[in-house]
Image 1 (cartoon, rainbow, N blue to C red):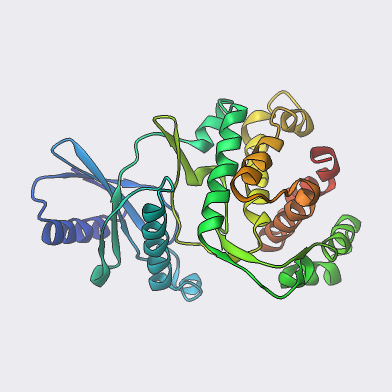
Image 2: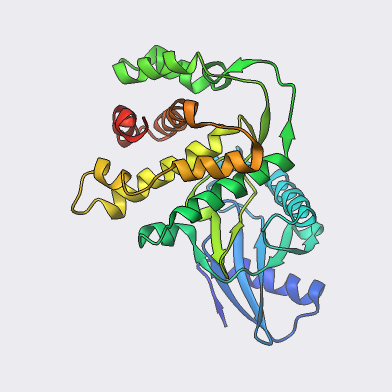
Length: 301
């Protein structure tokens, strides 16, 4: 049974799966996966695989800013490297290069996003998440970068510093000038709870097409900002954001990362969070990110 908003893309993918994998009788259903691909769960003889077709869902105007082939090669490269190193990720079963289709192991489990929505996030989960991110960074690390500040690394921060009269923006822009990094790692780019799954008590990372090289602390800060968004949507029905944030001790995230890498980001966690918030504010113009920035001293000591 084929169910998809874009039936033609699903039919096309089904024909490729049949041709290249020898599948004849199988079920196929779409899986929401964002703008850069069409994703499907394919089931044959009660066994499922996960299939990604890298075909753009964006409008033509936005499409020109995306290099789909590059994204395809990035996810393929990351999965191969993580699989070889034993870092928990879906196994890459096949790469159909002529069609920009990746065939992966289907991980059956619960999204880490759902765990936090339902307040099922023990401290050990955050520690494991920090360990996973640290292990990922260890695999894709570039040393000996030129010493550079966070302020100088991200041009949008300079734009905001010049054009935004908000005192809180100017204050954090000044703070970011003092944070110097000397290496980059392959970052998840938009690191959030939705890119992790818990299956049989094991934490898996998924969805690597948007990875790029950035300072290591950006991924850790992205997790924190992800929780701020969850707090706004789900956890703060009868409480303030500040009270909800106190429910989660993010020291466990940083401790897990330190265990994996030997690097302690606790002293400079706040500036990295500010960097991510300023990026999101610049990209979306949404005032909630400025609100989070104003409250950052209450969230992180």
